[in-house]
Length: 229
Image 1 (tube, rainbow, N blue to C red):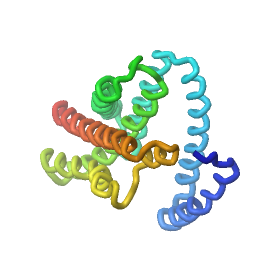
Image 2 (cartoon, rainbow, N blue to C red; image 1 turned 60 degrees about the vertical axis):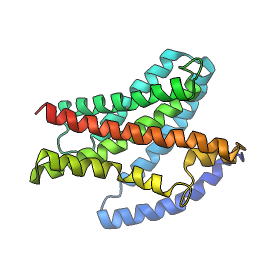
Image 3 (cartoon, one colour; image 1 turned 90 degrees about the vertical axis):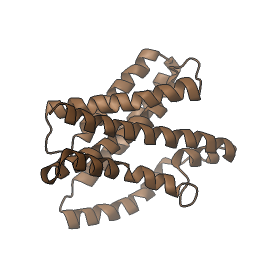
């Protein structure tokens, strides 16, 4: 795979700046895109250096610590757009993402990939990142829609709308894959020289696990809120 020169990354500022301009003009918020973009770059470089250390040491407890951080931070980010930012709601999000995501993580690393040792950070951390990030996005979408719908409708109606809204991006991705788009992991493997048919198998696993983890997390979130009323 071709190495990207560091200075070539600057070309991506051009389309990013265009989006920032319209975001600023139409939403009157000049900071959010700049903050998110800067944070994205810093976090990726930091995790890059951290992963070098983690992969060299190959310690299960470091991998576990990273997973705990992923769950707590993804839950905090999912809370961002909600009106109710109470500790109770945060704890429900943590529970939903942790259970929904971890079920799929264990299934993939233990039974699908059959990793030995099963805690090998080189594989577990990237897979966990995909799982918890997608659970976070789904819970964030579902929770925000549920909160608004509950004002004007019953729990059952709000739950229906929230679950559907949270999974729209995932279902659209299922429908478009192979026709409109090649997913990121599959593209990366093909660019790295992996046989496309092997890359397809891995991508099927990835897409199934992120859809399942997202769906289970949202379902758990909605069930927990209703149960604790």
